[in-house]
Image 1: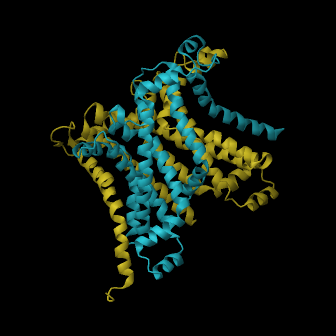
Image 2: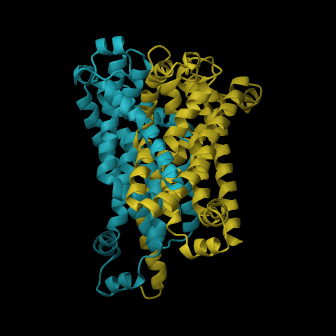
Length: 270
Length: 301
């Protein structure tokens, strides 16, 4: 009896956590008339995609999705590459002063973006990269790679020395050792980092909001946030916009769930 | 050639791999951070030449009530994003892992964990949109629910009432954040030696007793990491404030991050904004150092 009470309390908690998602889905498929007469809690008469379509066309959502994919995908690839280079020098090469270099990367990872935003905005303007996806890609490559370097250095610190020695005896230089030995063996960790960088970059808001002002460059969260801030949408369109913001996140969650759970654990033990 | 020991030659060539990452770090983080500190000692509108004013901006901060209020609001967010999620996360994780997992199977526990974790995968800006709509005063879902069950008097202007807005934001942040400690703590609990629990059980310890004296001490590293990362996240909060309240009503939910943004891009008081951002940075770095020290001391004991 008591066992079931505990189980039920957990189920109630889970349901409470899910209610907002359910409400969004419920109201995104209503017509504005249904919403104004029945409010947010009535079941819709049928599935109307009018709100979703109206919102999609209004913000050109396909373009925003593409922007987010291009930015997050490029950042994830580049940040993994930069992290591997850094961690190869620090974790395997054990270059002099590596502890202090690591501290610098750790601090870079902890700095609030508020303390970087104005100079970045100013410098991007100076070099003609303001309001370009490239600026955001470069900046987040560095921010994500700071974390990746930190995590990957400790992973590579425990890399089997015999393998490196064997490669050296076979005449491989440092570059060949990295590409043929270290990277293939570290693939699972690199995969987790890729997933993390992709999702983190996808979810970023502050710097993209400042750096991407024109509509055609904006990412999904920025486009949604800006529109919400203008308070120009009716209730069904708001929930339609929320639904379109939620769907990619849930798709990533389902695809990457395994990698994510493993990765969060890896991050926690750092 | 043979005069140079191989180890030194080795190290030299490894350094090349640090060059791209090091240059990028310099250009995107270290130089801008230095510039921000420099700007904080000037008066500057963002155009023209910055005018050196020494520590004036920092002096002004000391007596700026908006600035202090924004830090007080931040304390509330630390409670909502770090303290409460850690406490709730411990109880939920232990219940799911020890109780649901053992009596009903780990699949049930995994499904429930996924439900609690789901808000964490949303972009925070999107979570903010969801909640600003649910909390809307007229036709928002929360007020509709309250009216539907006859609690009309409890229906509020959740985000528009200066006395309530911060509490509402804290509630939203708790919803977003709680899944993170649950997942991390459950992963940590897998590490705990079951023999410890069995020994405690033989000694007649209750579930709560085992929770406090076995589980919590054993996953202390995870608790530290969660408290540190969540506290830093709470100090940096921007997107939910931007989407939910824009710091309002009447500045009642303003936080340092949003206040510096306002100074940078709305009031064009760039020097003052830079000073706020610098103070925030110092606070975060000090907290990080203190936490890491405490963690190290804990490890050595």
